[in-house]
Image (cartoon, rainbow, N blue to C red; front, side, top):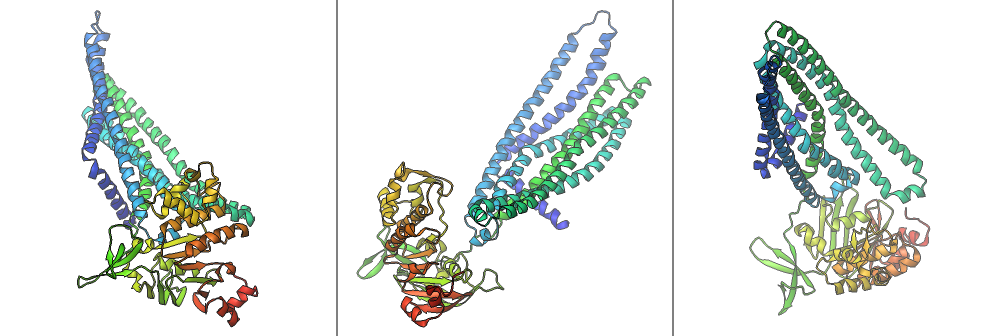
Length: 620
């Protein structure tokens, strides 16, 4: 409990820091405006006493009433309320600017930080849960900053000012009101506490529901192919029932809170009216004092109800803020590399760094003694006794040793879960190994900066990722500063140019929703064109043709064959016919290399590869 309170205090401090860093002046104006607006309400209520006692009551007993004084007093009262209206407008308008500015900053920080997170973070969370942080949690924060906080502060200032005015009017009536307030606080703590607890659970349940919906949307084809509709509906119903239950209970307690507070307030109002009437009959209080005091009662009890109700929004927003800060506080991808990738040229047989793009790349390696050496990028990759597990105590790769020489095509074969994709993830340093070494052009890849390492690698995956934009923009992901001519050349190399020219606007055709309207083969050709434009020395093909029909596969395979020329290529394939021409084939089983060699050598061994190729053994 103490830990939870400490975490909430820390969250509040961080939120305040966002506000005070950029909006000190605006915040000061807001606070002053709220105080003036609250005081205006109290002064206006007190003015009722003087209107009745000093102007209205004397006029009732006058034979020749003069309304000049009353009209002047009403004009003064109107001016006072006009000041209150202006101050209310000012602080509400400024709080909108402040809250939107803070949220703009938080969203930018979230997104920028998310780009620096390791793949591990996204592998361990559903996309729906992360999206819920950007939408639901940020929205609760917006409501708290723009509405709840100003209302609570205004209510507290009003209550303090009104309490002072009530004490100044009559002690006994004030004690009656305070007795009602004690009862209100007791009811508020009980109902508000339960409501807040369920509102926090509601936000968690919304994240789970969004995560499940996102999974089902991405996997609709699988759902339909395996007739999983009924089971998916049942699972959704369970999650939805939990959300419905938490929302129902949260809103039930929240909705009965205000009526309870209002009725207690009404009870206090009646008691004050009765006791005030008795005091007035005995000449202790004037009619104007009673009228003003009754207004004070309303002005005191109503804000108390508002505070109780807004506390739910504040608790919910703080829970959302904790999830937002949890994302922001996630440890960034660690990069201790210092070897960088640079343009180079050959002068007098030596590699020299160049500011211009030359088509030659080199690794720039600074040494502790101040020397800088350059190693030409050729694309040789070596694994030496590599051990790896996604969890520290559970290894899934065991003693992986292999060498992919410059320009070689190395293929991995094995059942699902054998470790094929994991090996390619290690080359990219999406994950770091626990034991052993991986060398790239004989440089330990842990010494190479990750951005530079990945810039030298190209990937064509089974699941293509296209983005909202033109065909040209999507191909340019491989090289952002590419010219139109370079884009077209890459498309021709990948065999994508033909279908692109048949589209309505050609390369300027807009695509949305990960390439809706394009076939799987066309999307894959764009992915190959993107890799071709990047022109990497090392290429990774992860089951790039597994979800394409045989006819389209020939077109895609032809594009990939052109792309693979002169590069070191790692291929993961289910169709063994696509890897027959590989220089080296690795057969994996439960994270171990059990066979290695080219196609002819492995066929002669008549082992696992032979069984897979002849159909005696099937790849799971």
